[in-house]
Amino acid sequence: MKHFLLLFLPLWLMSSEISVQVLGSGGPEGGKRASSSYLVKKDGKALVLVDFGGGAFLRYSEAKAKIEDLQVVVLTHLHIDHVVELPALMKAGYFSNRTDELSIIGPSENEYFPGLNEFIQVQFGEKGAYRYMSDILTAQSDSFSLKTFEVNKNRSFDFSGLQIRAVNVHHGIVPALAYRIKIEDKVIVFSGDTSARSEALTRLGKDADILIAHHAIPEHGYEGARTLHMKPTRTAKIAKDAGVKILLLSHRMKRTLGLEKEHEELMSEVYKKKIIWAEDLMEIKL
Image 1 (cartoon, rainbow, N blue to C red):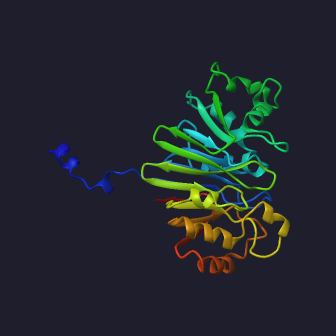
Image 2 (image 1 turned 30 degrees about the vertical axis):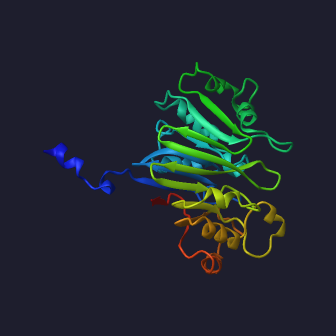
Image 3 (image 1 turned 180 degrees about the vertical axis):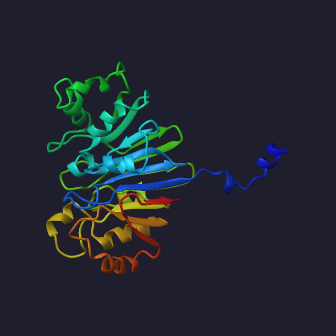
């Protein structure tokens, strides 16, 4: 009888709970917020880690996330405030029960920045800063090994139950990626840091359940930073044109703190749906 009833349960009762948790909602200046970092979770398990800036390691523990559950780490770019605590996570993984290979996706190099492969070698390679952990790059590791994927051009990935698309976006001279992650019927898009001077992010965000966009510059002033970040009204237009259901504003820097009311009023003139201001450890169920 029990199995008979299960067959007739409504679909919404049988579907998984998909959520996004903010580990770090701040920028590179320090303060009470950790730097950029996020988890994509299914039924409470963290499957995807997006960026891992300063303070994110502590937040990862506070979120009760387990490295054993991770399927993939995705890095938007290699600025310090997005990647600096990755070695700490790898070291903690040595003391975990994880034995499965861990995949990491990140950008390729240019003349100013290393690509993901070189970035990992500089840390864990035979001549790296943390060379005592070089076995993490081989199948002979006592815990788990890393598998890296550099994205030179737009690229799609399939991991068990996860579809991930990485797209190049403009962030000054820095190689940078935005990501679209589909898990079951939910779509989560991460802008990373970008000036969004093209329509790449709009196309990537099409009909997403949530767009996590970085709010690093105010609407007026900071002209030099506009080559790196999008102003609030640009973010709102992308969210509107893409038709995203929720806009989550993160990477909140000191130059934007205190301007939330003003900026939300400006953005709401363009984007009429839900706007949320990110806080560390906030979790949004989709």
